[in-house]
Length: 269
Image 1 (cartoon, rainbow, N blue to C red):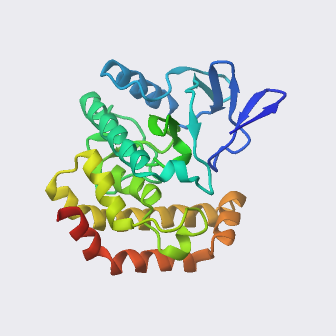
Image 2 (cartoon, rainbow, N blue to C red):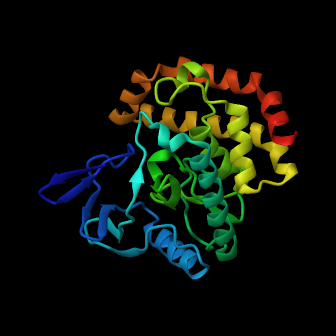
């Protein structure tokens, strides 16, 4: 979504950079993450390996901001609209993520970079994962995922970890009470998880692992929120309070554990 400001068009969506991201013509001007130089190098290398579905870095400014190309399209913001949660949309997210991982694997991981650790795969890996492929960070055109944006949490990991992170938002992997606050009703989680895995082309061994990795990713996200809340971040404090507090996280984790076998069966049958 876009709103006019004196400094350009404010791009809304997401939490960490709310009110600080602007479009100026064909460029996006936003706060630069600490490892922006490495991210820019990686994004440019992705393009050389055929992945054009991400912003092109233009440069860094002296006041700690970065400029990237603007990608036209539509981004789904909460509460998420029906068009973003069709089977077609879901499958397109899986295919786009696979294309990103294939290109990222070809690029490899630059040595000596201090990657963002907050949402990173604790097992590590040789592919730079996005780690935050939520609806706010996927640009759609004609009902299909066309590009990924906001690579602030990118870090090396396993592709199945990145897919698990995406599944949390796109299936979604939430108990019905938690999902009802942001998603349309009657989404069949096991079936949608299978749709995402099929579109991605996830092999059998990783299909068997995926439900457990989703539980691990949920624990990582909970710990991330906990650190932000403990640090006094007002955005995360408000989100935690508005979305049911820690009881919501308890409920989600219990729901995932209780349905692990059902998710595994849906993925492997």
